Length: 385
Image (cartoon, rainbow, N blue to C red; front, side, top):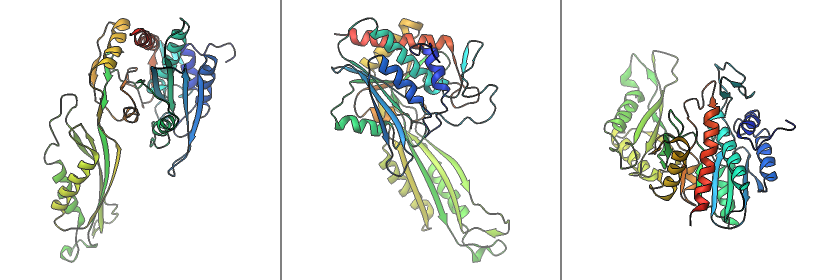
């Protein structure tokens, strides 16, 4: 890589993709980024957290300047496993027919390279009043225990503040700039185990079959819609994801049956209120039967109402692409769910059609345009009175 300009978005993207940073491994991805940022004058803090029995995670917080306001770009260098079906090497970062291929190209190493390059171009234009920072984690695709949330706790403890944040998740749907995210639904995952008494299927009266009870309980959960949606959110959903008995014999009534389900919920709900509703509904449907319910809330719903931040993003997108992005709250969770506790946050990035898929890729024209959009965000933000 000698002589390569890693402030160039394409070259930095390729350097990052070549690091196989499948969660929780970093494999030198943050070293690559830190070296670039240090040369640009950023003060870099490498933060490793290993709490709560989870794998140690490396994170990076870098800041240029010490004054307010502090404009932050946030993202993650960790990626999901490769999987099967690739027609090119997942970590080789090949450029083929105008596309950069590799795991993390769409989600979201190219975005990190784009806002790093945008920052380099912006600060090269001269002095500005305020600070630019990057908050990069290696734990977004995993359990998110030792990543962004811990970095924010570290920042709060030392009096470090962010005034506004743009997360570089791949929010665009089919064309760069057609969508930005101003919020996300909450996510709750539950594991339900219903108990009975094992017995011979020829003598069902001598057993207590948990399967019909589990079916009744699940039916009660999906009998009616949770809601009809709100001004900025689609209707909440409850999806049954597994139904397991683990019974290898067709003539044995099992002693237990299990299921799992996921709730994606809007701002009409909180995780704790949903837990209470689940318990009440399942108690009624169980009709006295014994069951266990294990609930994990991975994030609450949140919204950054349309206003200065969404207007900044929309204006920058329109400057570069001529498009006006739809403001959406669709999709899964992101680390914006943690950042919203510190400052207004929104998400904008590449087209996400190939994220987590084989042959994940980014169009070179989109990478160039995204860099220009991030640069316009900085220009507009720091030009504001």
